[in-house]
Amino acid sequence: MTQPANPSHKGVIFSGMRPTGLLHLGNYMGALQNWVTLQEDYSCIYCAVDIHALTTLESGEDVKDIKPNIEDMILDWLAAGIDPEKSIVFVQSHVPEVMTLQALLSMVTPLGWLTRVPTFKDKVRQMSETEESVNYGLVGYPVLQTADIILYKADTVPVGQDQVPHIELSREIVRRFNNMFGETFPEPQAMLTEAPLLLGLDGQNKMSKTLDNHLDLAGTPKETTKRVLTAFTDPQRIRRDDPGSPEVCNVYSLHRIFSGAEATQTVYNECTTAARGCVDCKRHLADSINDYLKDLRERREEIKARPGYVQEILQEGGKRARAIAQETIAEVYEKMGLG
Ligand code: TRP
Ligand code: SF4
Image (cartoon, rainbow, N blue to C red; front, side):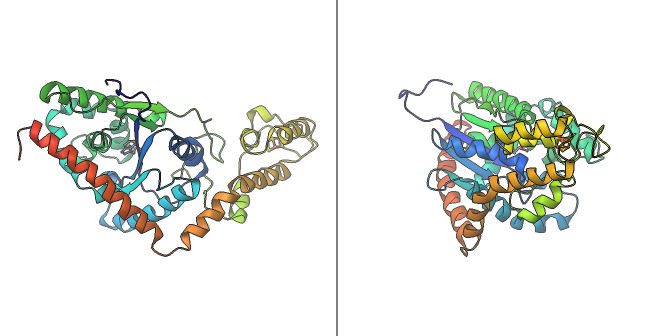
């Protein structure tokens, strides 16, 4: 992309999350916290991608969860510090222009680019489908994602490693479009977060709701403690008076993130000398996490108590997003010989 003429000009950030409902600590450490920080230096646009949620629909029943899931997720965003005064916060389907752009971009996207994306192959397998039986909508997932980003001419996309192939594809689609119809869109860049990978309570896999190894951001302290007590620890430490190995224990890794340097040193010393048991160690961790999330949880309750507030934010965000989207679509129509 060409450098903006004014070097103080902020870049435009776009990112999205599928509305899966309550967010967990891994979502917060891996993405949301970073989204909040980026608000200081960029124009940010954050989107609840409800149309993407339809790409893996299994039955007509699934759609009844979408609206409450959006509400829960947006409450988490706002509680974490996403500020609707600074950023545009909106729901994908409130800006139907994204589907227009998706359809138009599909004219410059070879099918082979889409079927070779690793996330596509994974989803087909997970859904026990074949590339022939799978919905057209799922094949087009990255085209819709590209439309999301470039509808607002965003140049920077904070995402996790798993999304890098999608952004690469977005860049290819943009290059092809620009070549055919003239320079229109910036090539979006993935911005990887440096957050430490948070393993779930199983100590094996990345924290995830599907694997049920997660801690809800919005959980109560009691729920959090109850779940932390189920965490896997050093598997070699069987009896209370066995010394443990913090290096292989995810509870210890979490202490390092949430308990502060001094307490973490104490955990290390007491674990390796069998001066503390795993149950107490997990209670200690639960307290640290509950402390860490205290303010966020309080803010969430405050926001939740304001009737209609989230919907107002989303209406307003949708309006602002739509105004930009309509300009882009007018330009694309012109370039593609439509209208
Ligand atoms: N595919 C992304 C994910 O599963 C969500 C997403 C949709 C997205 N549109 C986007 C992310 C645009 C960044 C930019 O996490
Ligand atoms: Fe892990 Fe703590 Fe048990 Fe040591 S005492 S093995 S760090 S849970």
